[in-house]
Image 1 (cartoon, rainbow over the protein chains, first blue to last red):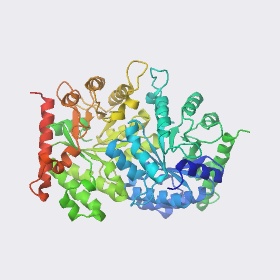
Image 2: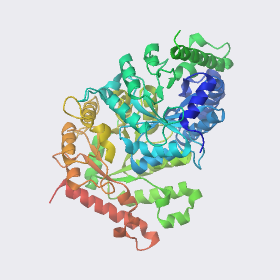
Image 3: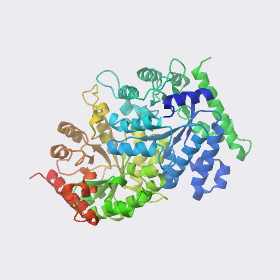
Image 4: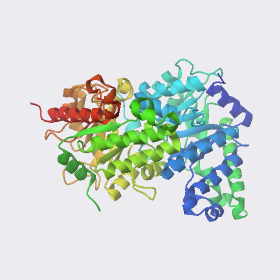
Length: 304
Length: 304
């Protein structure tokens, strides 16, 4: 047995001194011009490879965790999925903790197939350290992933409250007990997080939650329902969560919340605030935006 | 513009005379022995290809619709995903309506990436006619798929009530208005199904729902909330839905519900009732189980 996911995560976060997470959502049309010239459309996958490698190298000295979104690799079918796993392995080789943003969810033997395919290290090669999952099926959809977590010291993040405008259509539906659907999901995630082998020595669980409510009070309620969970908080930057909303996702000890920014970091060269000095210097824009993310998250963790 | 998904579906069902659907969940260890001898483990993907092709050829004269479950291809990473899309294209070339069972769900530009990757016909090749989706995000997660439905006459099936034991942990949570989460999801699916361009000439919508409640009364309620939706009803056979439960998913006109059986058909050679006369004759077992599925579904549609 290696080290428990939550303990590995906390050690990596401590080493870098930040709970910031960089999300890798690569889109060919948004690559730096220098890369699009070097890799024309018909070599898009090679262009994405060069981009992802350079971004991972730029951010790996600065953050402990990256999130790779498989949706942006799947349009390239087999070649895209191979590239996704190649980048998962490359990020891990750089010492990063890797979250595979795959949002899978199914039941029974299908769920086990997904767990083996998307989370496990297998004959096919290494998988990510953790994946995002849908919890709509209840424990049946989660259990196969817990098995892989136990066997290989991995983690999961279950969707509880998403960051989009229409999240409330389902997630805010009022329950008879006075809570709502997101809170019910949070209660389940907390329960799954207390199952055998899930809690690390650090006290945090390998079962985390995706929590990005648009209102501060909802963030507080969900944090309260998930005392031992690591919250993966998307939407810092492009999706515009406020400092207070994000702060409410941390535990009282200032830890336990991974604050993710994707486009705000990886596409920083397109932002006037981070305009590169030359087309080839685009990684410096990414690096500076990542530094600023780390500073911003640090200010949230320990407000002045 | 081609023909609307719902109209194509109804025409195909009418041509074959059955709402039965065969689910393709290929697992190497469960392939017929003859195939495992011809394709040893290190050529597993080739073995799955031979299996899927033979199954598709066996069932295509008997049913109108097949459901290909991508979870069983993803463990083989790039090669598996390539095979999945190859089989999608092959099934379509045989005249079958193809549902890609992918259960994706995300928001914004991620959802659009999934819609282009998993549903659309693209430069990469044809996609399936419809896909299964999670609706937990609300309309934001669905809208990009509706765009592809409008552009390319495709369809979606949103998870409303799943067939597993723990489905109720989320889906039965009691709402303040006296309904439950599955019913709220059904109301949303009905609403999305009435959006521009979604309804076909036949009166059915391109926005369907996955509905497999374990209790008859729940099936009736959900059917009532989804008058114009095609219901995709898994769990006939291996997961043991009763005749009455399945019957309640049909509309009063005897249509509008695709009744899926996966392992009960594709692995029929391992069932003593369908034991093949020789190891090579395993496709005859599949064919006979498929005929029996069609008969069983026919009896449900029009009870004696």
